[in-house]
Length: 364
Image (cartoon, rainbow, N blue to C red; front, side, top):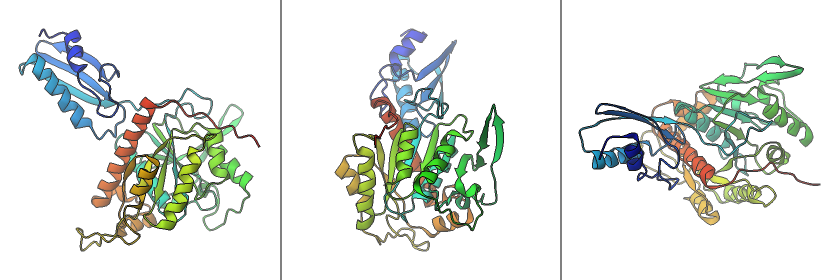
């Protein structure tokens, strides 16, 4: 076969994205083909820098090219990424591609710890990430990022005061904890808490982001409704432990997003504290809170099971010290990085297969 751009595209049109079930050419993932003698280079533009199938796609491309053109041409494949979105250039957060709700139903299941490590994991892959601490009465993000003493700057744009988010470990952050004294309690009624969340969304200079994670408080409250009424949410991630009481509340949290008037896609379920592994016995697993509760919840609602995170002392220590566990080598880093890749994958599948989420209008 003659070495031309048209023939190269014809060959690569046989290579499918394993998740999106369409060929790379139709998806617009093959770009910048250049032929210089027997040297050929082109870009493969993935749907996320966290793509776990990067090597699979690259090898499938090379196999197809060798099959059609033989081994003589010198192929240079550059794997790049452009995070997908179904959002329009809306007036609120116009440069944010995906808004992800991190919810639990029950408190104490490690939702904020999971949100923090997911945000840092996604940033480590090269994605632009922001994180909103929407737990107004119990903010924990400043502590977990070791920025408790920080205060965000204010800049004036036109007649409006805009908050500049704190940035740490490659993640842009906003929390009520930056605006109140460390030891003081935020005792606010629902409307005041909802108003604070609206400000965190619309009065903060988020800029360009691939993913904006919103760490929600436990339960199904005013904050949850305010979020879906303010911005179209790409999808929700449900965090639970295997425990029956946690699963009952996670069940309610998941059901809330699935209500017809809310209709936010569920990206999947994470099972936190899935098992205990002592540091001195790294191959042992003790299922303290039960086994595979999160997996069963995902199966019940026919949503993806994103993965499980063990109980490891270093995760707790990392939260207290403000240096997330995913930044340290070891089993927890691997678990969180895999989790981030799986969530990025589910977002790409959701964006390719489902219509955009609308802002919710709930009539009293």
